[in-house]
Structures are given as structure tokens and as C-alpha cells.
Image 1 (cartoon, rainbow, N blue to C red):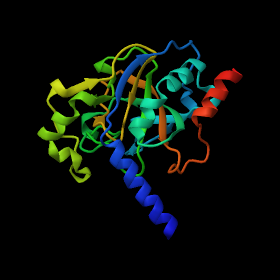
Image 2 (cartoon, rainbow, N blue to C red):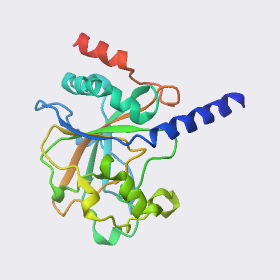
Image 3 (cartoon, rainbow, N blue to C red):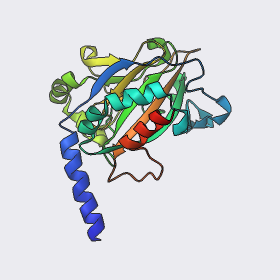
Length: 238
């Protein structure tokens, strides 16, 4: 019981620090042809709508993360930990594929296509990496930049209430950024603090993207994780 109380207090403390530190940082890493290879047969549905999956993913082993990506992570490690509000670990690495959703299935949220923040559980940061040239036709990830967060919170206070989460919430486009670009472009974002959502690819288009997730070391429930030292060791070993 005491351990649970201490964990809850620590979580609230770290959340209080993290919520004041939004993060949205863009960059580029040069990927080789076979880096982050998507294996269609390994994809598993995230959500099923009448037995059809519009969003799928599969795991990437830590050993398959390219050295150039690990180096970018270390380069931005301080920013990641500030956004987490705590000492961090690399929690997981996945490839996601989103495809077009017919209008008949858009009456509910199919793959995180409502504006939200990932505030259930512990603080979190993600590094997204594009795997192909991505435009608005591909249904890109969209987000509120750190410098726009205060204005958005003032204008759209209902966004802070998870119970009001809705695919119909509209935010003025001048505050909305889309993660578009070329293969190797990346975005580091606090998914705990910055509002974000997916968008829907148009018919005949898809969006493939890597997600590398980070959490506080003392609160993670994941068994297999990487610390800063582990990442440096992997780089030196390669």
C-alpha cells in the first residue's frame, strides 16, 4: 500500500513538471534502404471495425534501430528528459501503418484521429520517423507546436477534458502543424503535453511511420527498456 502511494505521488510530481514543458522538435536522419523494414506479415491490427483494420503495427527489436537514429536520440536526450519531467528510458519501437477509412466507418475514432493528449498513465515522449515521402494525402500525424500550446489551451479549454475527446473538435489551422516531409524526417514530441491526432489517408494512399517511445525510468512498467548508458553502449558496440 505504501509503495503504491509513493508511486502515485511520484507520478503526480513528474506529471506536474512535464505538463509545463511541451516539446515539438523536428529533424532529419539519413536512413539506409533496409532500415526499419516494414514486414506486412508481422502487422497486427490496433483496432478492428467490422473485422477490418485501418491501423496496424509491428514491433522493431532494439538491435534493429539504426546507429544514426540512436545518435540522434542521445543528441536530444536532455530535451526528452525535460519533457518527461524525469530520468528517462527508451520503452519501445514500432512501425505503424494507417490506411484510408471509408466514410461509413468514421462515426467513431478508429486510430487516434481525435485531438488528445496521452495523459493516462505516466508521462511520455515519442520520436516519429517518416518511412516514405508523406503529404496530407497520406494522412499525416498532426500536432500543436510547443509555441502555440498556450494559445490553444486558452481558446479550446475543452481539449483538457479527456471525456470531451471527439473526432469533431476543430482547431484553427493556423495552430495546426502536419508531420509531412521525406523519408528520414523525424519529430520529437511530448505526447503527454502537446495535443495531437492522426489524420485519414485518402483512398489509395497509406502512411508508414516509426514510433520510438520514452517513459520515466522509475515508473515504467515495461521490462525490456534502454537507458541512456545502454544506448551509448549499443552505439559503441556497432
